[in-house]
Image 1 (tube, rainbow, N blue to C red):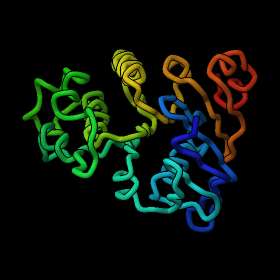
Image 2 (image 1 turned 180 degrees about the vertical axis):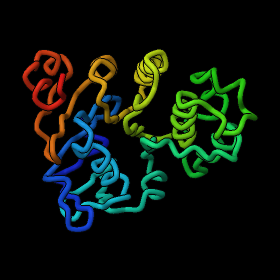
Image 3 (image 1 turned 90 degrees about the horizontal axis):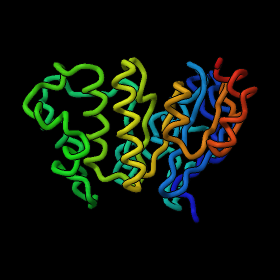
Image 4 (image 1 turned 45 degrees about the vertical axis):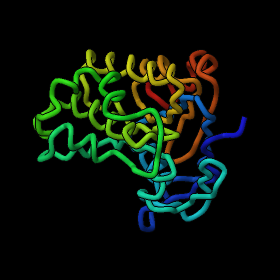
Length: 234
């Protein structure tokens, strides 16, 4: 099966600082791949490289068989890459309904619309007129994922989705990701919560100091206690 996304030898810089060193990864249709690593390992920079927010100086981003390296983020969204950033980027002065509607991409067709989104996120149904800025952290996380799905992405990218959330909300989010997987959604996420990653992922890529140091199926990764201790401080 052809991969929906491939990152090939990404080298990305912030100014003169070299952050990513020949990072490669791939995601197949219907798969959930988790990029794991400590804070500052390069996870967010990898995603920014994929989205064209911080284009790599070397390497390629192949999305749906096309070289999309360095294309701006709005074009990547139109091509079908839905990005949920770590800081969520909820528009506080806008209602939940308006935040969701802003996620629509008219050129993209699919099964996701306001009705189907609310079926997967029933907690949002009762707060459609609330302002985004009044929501809790967990509610905002649900809203930003729902907003990305409104664009009917071919690949959903989640950057640190459990960061700063309570254990109860993390459990709710885990159940949501599992449901999305079962519905056939292709997902790439970054995560430090190893239990969460093991519960939702098919494969794991570990990144450390800007290098991809491990890649394997989740069942194999569960047995790699030395990798977990060395790179994830388990």
